[in-house]
Length: 281
Image 1 (cartoon, rainbow, N blue to C red):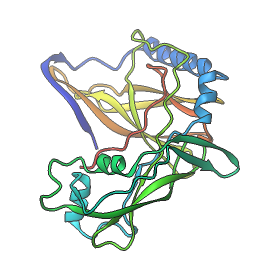
Image 2: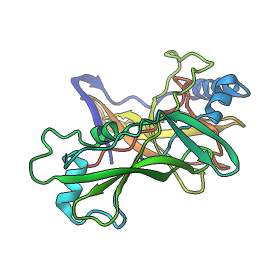
Image 3: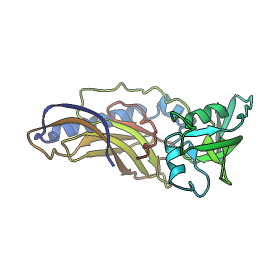
Image 4: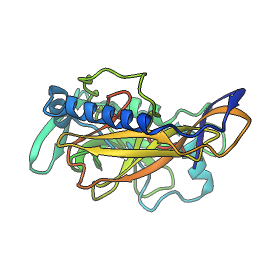
């Protein structure tokens, strides 16, 4: 799947190759510098101590949606609420890992969690999902170190025996990178992290590339504290003029060892790659 994130029609020469060996070495050197900057840094320690989800904040009812209408209503944020949503009065959410110190984060109230799901223009239209109540419970959320037990709002839905769950803990902010971004090194930005496999070794990201190339490539440099991803593009496949078009395409990379608390970094920005789910088609 390729996501078009911006289109600007201009005259662009599309017959040049990806770059020479010097460009590739410059990108590798940049990755090494980013990895060295994060190694043993306060930023890396802050990352390990935080709550950084790498799976979605929402879990549909057990067994999935009853049909296509409900699936589309969920994807479009078409909800209505019957009655009032509860307020806990609590301010903190405890995120816990087995055998590790917990993290305390601000709690998201039920009305705010509901508002994040009900983003459609008019939930009263058809189709829609009806929330009939909510209570505070827990759910499991994947993180770079291990799955975490996270407070969650359990929203009861009309017609469903099990609730829709939405995480109620605010993620930790990304620490400030110990290395500045660069614009002088050739390469493509790794836009976002979209998932980590159950074994912690398969990492899927969205990588940017152009309309006239054969797609993105993502190289991996692993260190003790980080996984540095370097985006580039395969050779161009057209000659002459083409649209200058930016796309995001999923790329899956395989690590030599599990992520295990390490931070996933983009070589060009030097910063953590943010997690974000791929929008539904």
